[in-house]
Image: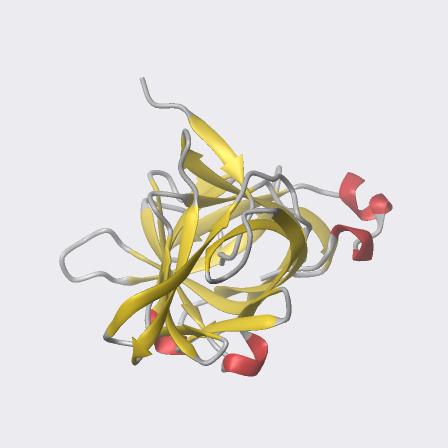
Length: 241
């Protein structure tokens, strides 16, 4: 039997630190991830996310060293059997990356991001917590290489693993109209801090550090689950609507 354990790390797909979000907002109206062909309806859907905003707005920072990936090479995927879900599981894929100016890889290693049920902050604005779920004893792995470019590299210099942790903060989710596919979509904003990680090899000692930071902006869209996907509206509705 396979078990899951939660770890916190770079994902991920945008948000705010827990301290920034008022506690009173946490007791607000709950939201539902909703997708369908028309507003008010819902149906089976697949989700796609795309990082945007460039390196200055999308990075992981570990002990002062920034890691970045090309916008078009950072994607997120998920699915819904009904088009209405309290939580959303998202798989991330990071390519064409570098850390401290050197080529690097970010391997999710079978881990998925879990976005918890949203809580309403304002009209069209919600907040959620994010967990990273992995198979037991697994973790995300960042490898830094001495030579090569972002697409080809050799001579591994060191490795960084993102260790077990929970609830590093709150992401912000914004309902947006007329997105890139002509349908409504969700903008996700992340700014997480105090990420736990371990350094191996030339990256440093194996002492666990907790000064990691992750910042990112992502657009999430929806479509039908078919060979020729049809765009769907994707938004957060209020529970009970």
